[in-house]
Image (cartoon, rainbow, N blue to C red):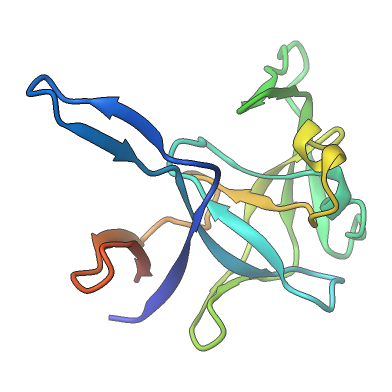
Length: 170
């Protein structure tokens, strides 16, 4: 079974909690990430694998570099449909749906999962956290739209280091 290694990235300090027995426990805050090969971009971008996100979505800092009609096509809402807002930690955003006309690649430097016809949200704007840092914008790879269908996300703890590991298998 082909496997794509996911990078487990800590996002902030762990959260200390106390078990009913009185034992202290430090809960890690971890994101699983991979690299994304995207149309019209020479350098891969970070992608967060987010199984809690119903759709894949791209902030404007990334999608503004794509070409309408070449890299993607718009998928407008049906007339009379009230478009919902997208939501992520600390940010609500408006968006439009698109279908990529070029393949998108999820990779780890040695393995690549190529997806054609990915349907995603293009956010109007960028998350506030992006504006406060110099870090490049990241895309979110969600459950529906073609990126994760037919895959398994495997999460484990490395027996030697005790650190979280992740993989995408197909």
